[in-house]
Image (tube, rainbow, N blue to C red; front, side):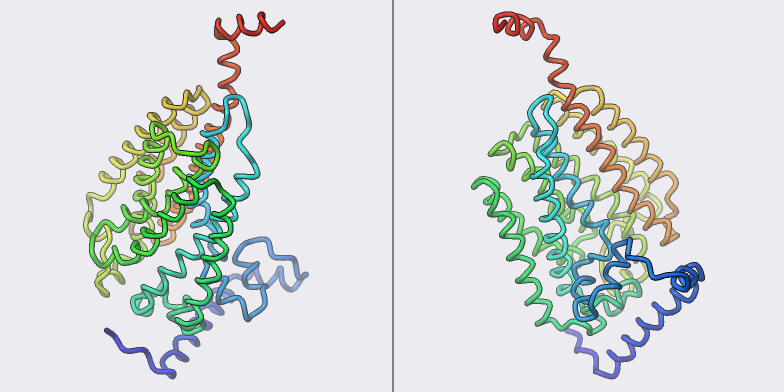
Length: 357
């Protein structure tokens, strides 16, 4: 076990973090111009965190409120499942969508807190993570533990508003959440375990609406989401290749080398195959399959054009998965709304209507 850094070294790190932030801001003249004209309200998550009271900023950063893309990637599989579970011709339950959105913010933050508590000694050695609240010393492990208790309590409150089946299913997700941060020390495929953890909502959303999982839909949907996570997390992990190699952390980015894009393409094919199976199992209509075709094109663009040696491009491609997820959600909703219209033209439906009149 590595010993804790001395106070003076931690102070140096805090100074370096502040200096890096100042350098970034000073290299952005448009920021200074906008500030000199007027003080506008915060419009991005990062600006919201920066404008919050100083005392809570480290905790907001620990929960990654300033980087909402992870929340989107946790939330979107939930929305897919909720929308697929909607009755034919009916818009998805927006109250349930909002509830799962709140849960995604809370539980993504809890997952990040757990991850940072496990990884603190590694994060001190990685340039990208050096200034996080725990490795920089802004938050102690005891404070992080207390914050985690608050996060998990809030998450439990959201979970308890669901049916019993969903509560038990949600509690079962805590095991993978706790274990996932250890996987990068054990295997070159921690992305698989992240996919298992992050996409629990692909099952939970359906059960929250229907009372239990229809595995003919939920299983292929879940098995589509896992390779999707492998794709975007492998792209993301290329930002840390040199640091991971130095500190002994494993990832597919290190294992696959020049073959990585072939593997990502294979995972993309698995994702789309399972999404198709899930759609067929719940009688989806043409808008859904159109959205899958567009999503496949988006994935192809990501994999073909990403510059894996360029950290900025890797992060931009990673973030673009929000739009892929929203595209599929639009297709699920549109396909679901057309289900009733499709059934209305079925001969048995017409006979039923005539008998009622």
